[in-house]
Image (tube, rainbow over all chains, first blue to last red; front, side, top):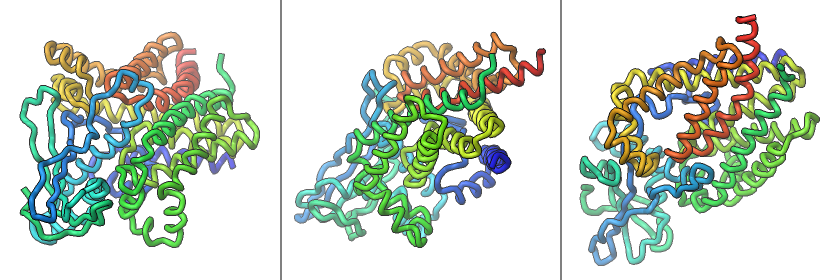
Length: 186
Length: 273
C-alpha cells in the first residue's frame, strides 16, 4: 500500500506539472479531468481580473412592449468581515466564470448559424439563461439577458455591453427557456 | 526538532478542515444558489460532459448532486470537517473522516466547475494525499504526502509568479490598480490609494512576483531564515483575504505550511549540516 501511495502521489504531481504548461497539452489533460484533480495554478496571471461583469435582463411582455433593463444584484461591495466570512464569493465567481467562458467561446466560433447555435447550446450560455429564466417574469412571454463590463466605481473607461442574448420564452413563474422570435439582439 | 510525519500531517488536516468548515458553511448560507435556477446548480454544468448525462452512474450522481440532496452531502462534509478540525484520531475512524473529506472535495469539484477557485483545488490535494497516506499507514507514506503538498504549494506560487512576470501589466503596476478598482476582487480604499500612488502599485506588483517566484527557496534556506519566506507567503494570503475577499485561500494554502516547514528542515538540514 505504501508503494501504491508513492506511485499515485508521484504520478499526480507529474500530471500537475504538465497541467501548468501553456498551450493545448494542459487543455487536453483537463478535458479528461472533470473533477479538477489536476490543479491550474495560474490564478490572476498573466491577465488579472480588472473589470466586473454585471448580468442584466429585460422582458418582452404579452402586449409586445419591452421592459427596461434590470440588473441582478450579484456584484456588490464586500462587507469588512469578508476576510473571514464571504458567502457570496462563489456566486460572484460563478458569474465571472460563466461570462469569461461565454465570451471566450464566442471569440472562437463563427458568426454563421452553426456558430450561433453552438453558442446558444453552450454550458455558460445556458448557465446565465437558466439563472435569468428562474426569476419571476410577470406578464412576460420572453426574456433577454445582457452582460455589462464595468471598470470600477469611478468607471473610466465607460461601461461596455459585451454580450446580449436572444429573446427566450419564459413561463410567468419559472422560465422554461426555448428560443422564440423576438426583437433582434442588440 | 523534527516532528513525526503523521503528527505534521494531522496538523495539515486540521488547518485545511477549518477552511472546509468555513467554505461549506458559506455554501449553506447561500444555498439558494445551489437550487436549479441558482448559479451553483447541477443540471446545467452536468451537460459539460456526456458521461455526467448518459453514463450508467449519471442518475446516481444526479440523485446526490441535485438540490436539495446536495444539502445532505454538504451536511456530511461539514460534520466530517468539524471533527477533523478538532483533531481526527490516528485510528480507522480518523482515516474514514479524512477519506470522506477527500471524496466530498472531489465530488464538489465534479458537481460544477463554476464558482470554484484555487483554495478548492488545494483542498482536494490536501485531503487526497492525506487519505492515501492514512490508508497506507506508514511514516514513509506520510512523509511522501508532506513532500507532495510542499511541492504543490511551491509549484503553485512559481507558476503564478512566472506567469505574472511575463505580463507587462503586472510589472508596471497596472494589474494591481486594475484588480483593486473592481467590485468583486477589489478594495475601494486600497484602490483609491494605489490610484493616487502609482509607484506603490508597481512596487506591490513586483513584490507579488518576487514573493511567488522566490518561495521555492524554502527548500535551500537554513532554518531561522526560512520563516521569513514563509511569513512572506502567509502575509500574501492574509492580504489577499483582507483586500480581495479570498478568505479560504488562507486556510487551504496555510494548511500546507507545516508540510513546508517539515520538508524544508529536512532538505536545508541536509544541505547545510
